[in-house]
Amino acid sequence: MTRLETLTNRLREHLGDRVLSLSERLGEITLVVPAASWVEANLVLRDQPELRFETLIDLCGLDYSAYRDGLHEGPRFAVVTHLLSLTHNWRLRVRAVCPDDDLPLVGSLMDVWPAVGWFEREAFDLYGIVFEGHPDLRRLLTDYGFVGHPFRKDFPVSGHVEMRYDPEQRRVIYQPVSIEPREVTPRIIREDGYAQGR
Image 1 (cartoon, rainbow, N blue to C red):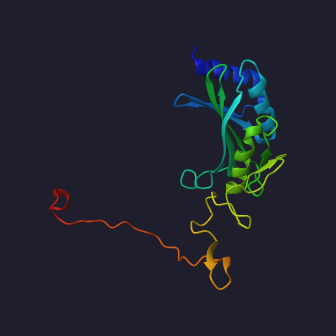
Image 2 (cartoon, rainbow, N blue to C red):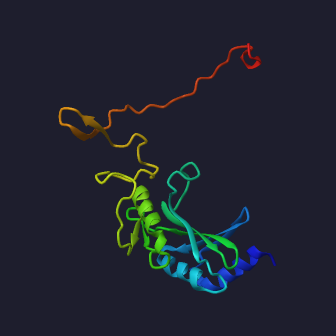
Image 3 (cartoon, rainbow, N blue to C red):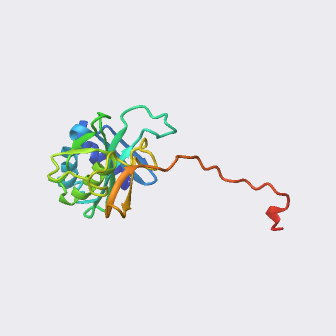
C-alpha cells in the first residue's frame, strides 16, 4: 500500500460522512468537506494522532464563476487550506464549497490554527467570503472605503474609483474611474522574410 493510499484510508476512517470527495492528482490528495463541517473536520485533521496535520501552510478563497470557460455549474465560492503533517510527512489540500453565492460563509479556523487570521481576512477582503466567528474580520489589503471584492471574476479590471492628489484641496480625493475600457489585440506581423531576420 502506498503512502497516499494509507492517507486516503485514514481520512475516510476518521472523517466518515464528512468526506464529500477524495481525489489524487500529481501526487497530492484533495479532500472536500461540507461547509457546515469545515471547522470540525479541520479539528480532526489536526488532533487525530494518525493524521496530525499540525501546520497550516495557507488558506485562500476561490471564485469558480469563470471556471471551465463559464461552464461550471454549482456554487460559486470555495475556501481551500493547505496542511502539512510534520509527524507523518504528509501534505493535504482541504476544500469547502460555500453553499450561498450571495453570502459565502464558512466557520473561522482561528480556534484551530490562530495563524489563519490574516489569511481569512485576505479571503474576506478579496473575495467577500465571511468567516463566522473570526474576532477581527475586516479588510486587509484594500482601502477602508473600498467597495467590492477585487478578486471576484465579475469585478472590473479598472475598478470603480480612482484616487488622485488635488493640489487645490491639498488632499487625496476619490472620483469615478476615467479610464475607458478597451480590448487590446496584439499586432500580427506578416511580412515575408521577417522570420529570417531581414
